[in-house]
Image (cartoon, rainbow, N blue to C red):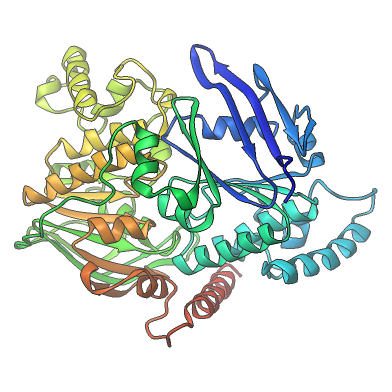
Length: 533
């Protein structure tokens, strides 16, 4: 292996107004390695990689690629320098084919046909070489997220990238798909490619990376060989204090049924059935976790229960039927009945981004008597209440006048959780509670959910993070294609079994996990395509 780094950043600094996102950062990434970058929300990871990929220009510092000083004013310059990036939210045209997406922006000449013909051959070789097989004629909208991710990697390799940056690449994958991705990354590394992996999952860092760099508050605090470190040490470097990496909770003491769901079905505006005869019970004093790959009905289940969508079937709260259609099947009625809802998409469904924090903390509950009577609201009381909640939930900065859009993702999530949990609801519906949230905040959020459970409340938790489901839930239900595939106790299952259920496989011989998952996901894709046709 050469001693010349594939990437070397020297003294990189970047400020956005008074906020110093990166401060004098230097890092070396050796060729043919998988290098992890971890840190809390707002640590500066994404800013640093955005500078490397040409989205931002550094205020100070130098970039060296393969030992040569390189100016990267935009993403096209990054591509010319051999850098490719796979974003957390894919940059694909949904109604284009795989082949069309791969060549988009890299066409040769004025005629498209020769470019497509050449790309087809190159694509086949890349797919065979790196286990990135995907139908070149398939529409992106008909592919699973795992296969869409393969397309993003193929796009970068088609442009002859030697350096590949991946931002939170496993957030929407099943465990089997994540394992397959790791095999792909190891194969790329073994062929001499350099991989930079941004992730908040310490288990993945330990499993896949050769070296890992830790950032905290805009600075680089350590770079270590992964094999010489451990999750506890890395977590402490990230946060600056010791962090409990497991959920600390006593065994559940389930009581009477609080939320009873029977034969719940929902069809969306496009005529696609998203929920299929779902039946589930959540008892007082327990957390029921819903595991599943995104897009298999979990979101719609929360939306129906939270009053955001209509459905057929039966839902009872404390033995009383609640309406699933009509004027009273709305969020306001649900809140009055004691159902609080932390939606999966905090920015579009949980917050109004241009409104102040104190306004967002009151939304949905602003007509309470303690905030005023009639049409007049007591804004002083609202702001005082917001200050108390922001202090208790460690929202940073604790400024109720700051607009929601100016908080980091983790602090936006704390605002939503503070609003809903502090209402002391009978039922808490919580979707992706720690998505995009750093380790320190994850620990706090888990503690608050357990605290509510221990008060005898019923919690319905949706998460794509199996570690979170296994650690937090007292009982696990797995959804696939709008159905409940089965229920398991965390102590009696593991990630492999849950991963198979998440792909619709109820029985499979040992060792067949990946093949079974991929075949099941392909079946689901074909069914989805047929429905849209």
